[in-house]
Image 1 (cartoon, rainbow, N blue to C red):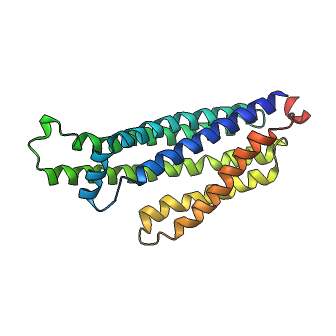
Image 2: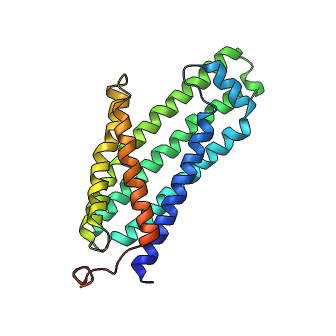
Length: 230
């Protein structure tokens, strides 16, 4: 197996792990958090605190896996254009950094509800309201990270298109996904009443993310064209 194939399949494997871990964390959290209902959310978290903590750790792990996958893609694509490859790696890193710091808002909800003595100065309903406030902060911080997660797809798609050892159609899909995924945070912050706009982002994202992942994992990549190795 050539070096490109090894690197591509490592990137695909890490990307797949990231997707699986992310979906697992989202599914577990969606069962607990009821936005707009502080009492129900507090009750769910307290009743399944271990599940909440597993989801939290899974999200942090997902960030590490995503950065590793981006690094593998950087190694694979830097012969095409090192500066552009560095750009998508830095954009990915920025998104992971924002999301990781934002995870503190998520965990703050559990800290507020854990019954610590120093929180006795607050009433139960006040603690529940504060927990919901931090969950909303987490939701907003998550959307800020999406700007970076969308932006990294453009230089990534460009390099995939130009590489010659990955299908050009994958590059085109990733570039389209960049603009499609940007619709999600723009809709969230500018047009919050029009949630339907974000549905297109999910559809494009599914095609782009899974398409790239499965191709890297199953098909790998060709040898570098001679124009890139000279």
